[in-house]
Amino acid sequence: MSKLRVAVLGARGRIGAEAVRAVEAAEDLELVAALGRGDKLEALADAGAQVAVELTTPASVMGNLDFCVRHGIHAVVGTTGWTDDRLLQLNTWLKDSPDTGVLIAPNFSIGAVLTMKFAERAARYFESVEVVELHHPNKVDAPSGTATRTAQLIAAARVEAGSAPQPDATATALEGARGADVDGVPVHSIRLRGLLAHQEVLLGGEGETLTIRHDSLHHSSFMPGILLGVRRVVTTPGLTFGLENYLDLN
Ligand SMILES: NC(=O)C1=CN([C@@H]2O[C@H](COP(=O)(O)OP(=O)(O)OC[C@H]3O[C@@H](n4cnc5c(N)ncnc54)[C@H](OP(=O)(O)O)[C@@H]3O)[C@@H](O)[C@H]2O)C=CC1
Ligand SMILES: O=C(O)C1=N[C@H](C(=O)O)C[C@H](O)C1
Figure 1 (cartoon, helix red, strand yellow):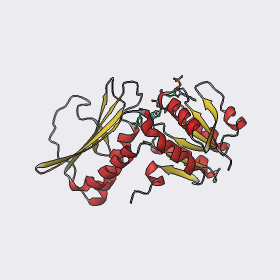
Figure 2 (cartoon, helix red, strand yellow; figure 1 turned 135 degrees about the horizontal axis):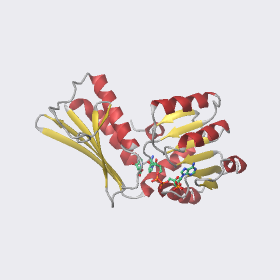
Figure 3 (cartoon, protein in one colour; figure 1 turned 90 degrees about the horizontal axis):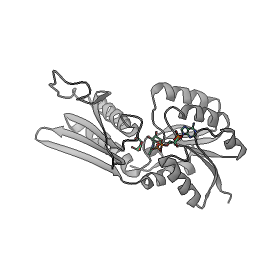
Figure 4 (cartoon, protein in one colour; figure 1 turned 120 degrees about the horizontal axis):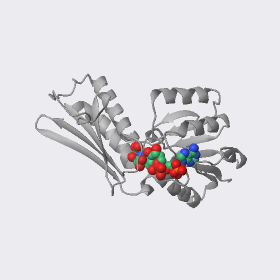
């Protein structure tokens, strides 16, 4: 059987470099291009890439996806910075290339995906819920894509359950003291040398709390999810948001 031809964008970055190694080590995949900033996207088409793994920056991702979708190259995207407007734009491009698949995964690690699902399930049972994400200080965006997605899932679950607004008597506060408001869920971002990617979801009810915590200790935690994404995206046209859609979590 012929190998799937894979390219990595952002190949010299922290996660991109790990992804290059993971693709090279996979027997059913062939690394045909490894591009960094300044490299020409035409190299993807010239190399006959079937799937591009996009691990760059929020400023670069849309231009790269525009190229990929126009050339029918499937994409597995870990880059953050997704807004409703960006998703709308991507869906518009995909309409003109209906056989092309794009997976956007706010987090490729199984533990982080489960954290999001557990938090979504638990959200309706507690009066209060806040998210704390902790990352290395080189991260350029805050809150993290994972925390944003977690808060959105929690908020949607609470709306569906008819939950009351969270109790919070704060009358005065320094700007930022209560975190960022993501659909009504406070999200707190910590940047600390020594950390990689961590998240806590704190839920509180009368006389009890529940904390769901996940730690990515090495970029290797993201590799099984990336490889799964690469193998599945070629038979999953259109936009898929979240690795959970490729997993049997029920
Ligand atoms: N979904 C997930 O599970 C994960 C997602 N991420 C996300 O992935 C992204 C990258 O993270 P990280 O590796 O830590 O960041 P880095 O800054 O280490 O890597 C990004 C790389 O992309 C390069 N780059 C920038 N623009 C382009 C472009 N147009 N074409 C090709 N390469 C480009 C950068 O080059 P230069 O240095 O020259 O700017 C850099 O080498 C972030 O958005 C991060 O949040 C990270 C880990 C897991
Ligand atoms: O920048 C990172 O490192 C990470 N980014 C993603 C995010 O913003 O959620 C995934 C993971 O947290 C690592």
